[in-house]
Structures are given as structure tokens and as C-alpha cells.
Image (tube, rainbow, N blue to C red; front, side):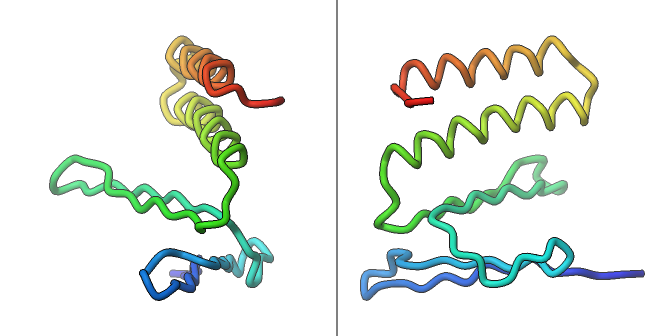
Length: 108
């Protein structure tokens, strides 16, 4: 069995707010790449629920956060389609992403 790692290093200020984050993915060729936001979801099979970690640095601009959310919604639709083959639901998620872009005034 082969193992690999993805790591996220977080530097906190005196109030425990993220100031700097870097991530590493050996197999992806990523080494100490800085990022302003991270969202991780894992499935807890025992409780049948998603557990998540949402972090962003205190200097991440709001307009970048809006774009980040938009891209996550788009990718949810794509991943849902690959996982289930349900084109109608995946298409609906794409529509939700576009409505989000309009309502949040994302400049595309």
C-alpha cells in the first residue's frame, strides 16, 4: 500500500486568527505554496455527516472570498456529476453558482 500526504501549515496571531497559511502536496508538486483560504470537508461514516474546517487569513479581501465561494459551488456541481451521474442536479448546482455570482456582485 502506498501513502501520500497533504499538509497545511497555519501561522496564527496572538488572538489565534490565521495570518499566513501554506500547503504541501508531495504528489502534486506543491511545496509551501501560500494560500489565503482553505475549506476541507470529510465524511464521518459513523454519524453520516460532513465535518469541515473553514479557515481564511485576516487579510483575505472580501471580493476574493466571494470568488472562492463561487468556484467552490461550481466545483460541487462538477464533482456531484462525476460521483452520481445525475446531470439534472449538477446543472441545478451550476445555476445556483451563477445566481450566487449575480447576488454577490462578483466581477467576472
